Structure formats: C-alpha cells, structure tokens
Length: 140
Image 1: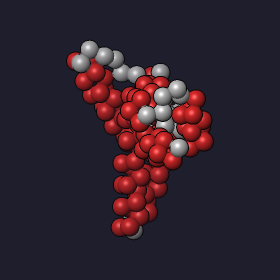
Image 2: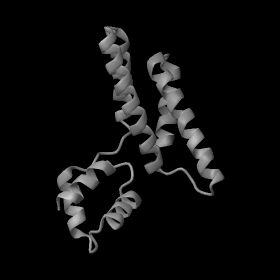
Image 3: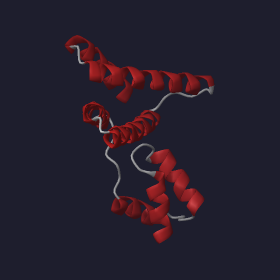
Image 4: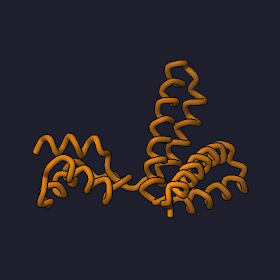
C-alpha cells in the first residue's frame, strides 16, 4: 500500500536527516491520517485510490507554490519545492493516456456519460484524470 511506503520513506528521511523530505512526508502523512479518520467514521477504509488522489492534489499545490516562488525570484525555495514534487511523483500511479482512456470507453457496452464516469471512478481512481475522461468521452 502507498501509505506504508510513505511511512517507510519518512523513517528513512529521519535517519538521513533529510529535512526537505521529512517536511514533505510529515505533511502527507497528516493529510492521509485525516482522510483515514474521515473514511473510518463513514464506515469505509482508506484505499490506494484515495491515497493517490491526495498525493495528486498535494503535487498540484506544490507546483503552484513553486511557480509563485519562481515569480517572486526565490529560486532556492523553488528548487526545494521541485525536489518535494519529485518525491511525491515516486508514489503516484502511472496515469492513463488519452488513447488508453478512449480504448477503455469503446469497450464499454454503455457509453453514456454517467455510466462511463462512474466506471472510471470505481476502477481507475487515482490513475486517470476525470477531466480528461470527460473530454475523451465527449470526443467520441
């Protein structure tokens, strides 16, 4: 599970005294723990798909933060954020390409928007961008 891998990486960052990685893993573990608590209260469990979504959101936030540091001319902080983005990307699943999404949609018996979106959310959560799925579906 991705969460377990992040916990191991966090311990390794503590041992190697890597402050950049340690700061990132602390934030990620806090976000994941909060989501795990919310899921447990709702009667569910945290899945790798949920974890991937949280990591994707964190990656997007870091990209925006890096861009803001670049605009402000603070290249040192931009490099630190870029390193953190690289660390997150190690745990993200490979994203489906537009061609792969199109192939999957064409294999489905019902190609209505609600059915296709529900299918991708259940089976490919975290490994595809739902916005891209919607765009490909509208092109068909």
